[in-house]
Length: 192
Image (cartoon, rainbow, N blue to C red; front, side, top):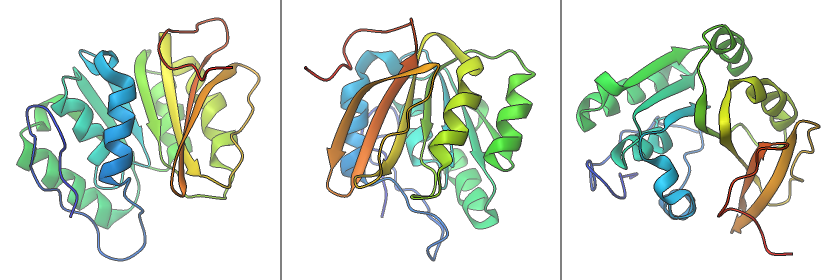
């Protein structure tokens, strides 16, 4: 069972959809992710794409994110996400967009939001990184960071307006850290 690892809602168990329609990010990978992000999470505007049960965005809220936007289109996952927001007490700091990621990103582009952190955990091996990364660029705040979860055996996408700053591998899961070209931040670079 998934749980919130740290922060205000630490230890709260999260509902997850039954079956294989979603693939939750493991506690181990989430803990590593938030150890890397550190203080960047505090007071951030967080976008959780392919949110599933919302574990990553909820972890961000628990660790001090100002607000989180969750994008998910699976009905069962949406029901779990809504229940998890209530159970953790973060309903007032969250917005759920029940739509396909492409539609949601087009909708968000018209709202003028500047996301500080974007986490995307799309289905593996379907080329979503090549779709998501270009669409996210205009949604980023200056210095905003995008984390794309992929399978370890999946190559990190190369996108013209984004720089791959680091790739961290945890078993069969890889976290790829991107930032807009020209807007590099400290603390997430892989050593050369």
